[in-house]
Image (cartoon, rainbow, N blue to C red; front, side):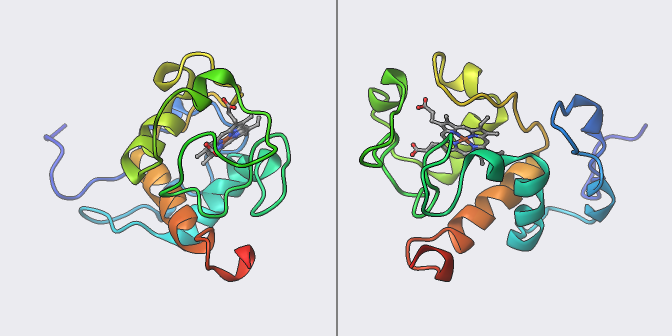
Length: 142
Ligand code: HEC
């Protein structure tokens, strides 16, 4: 194996514990990736984020409209864990990535019952989806 160069195929799917994480591996190609919201929407479904999170409604998890840039644990009326409310975090692309990579590692005691999204591009694309299609002023959030 040559060292990981600019051309990086995303292979570490073995690490994924999600329900149906495999199908989109073949979409990944090319160099330093540009985050892709449309692909992120698919990852969001495949990883069942949407089983627990909607745009505006409270499901098992809090609604995602406006989450990038929002104070963690701040949607009124949603029964957050103490640990997320006390975290003092404001969600950025970077700390959302760390959180969804391994929720319990990043935030011991969180109620988010999700094993983790280990693929870096999957995380970047999901976050791009959150930034665009779950932006506070996006159509889904009006
Ligand atoms: C099994 C249900 C479940 C799944 C699947 C799930 N979440 Fe969550 N999520 C939660 C819960 C519950 C919380 C609240 C955590 C707490 O109170 O500690 C949460 C919180 C969050 C937060 C913080 C929201 C806030 O208002 O502070 C983000 C961001 C988030 N989830 C993103 C995701 C993404 C992205 C995925 C898919 C990769 C995902 N979640 C999958 C249940 C889930």
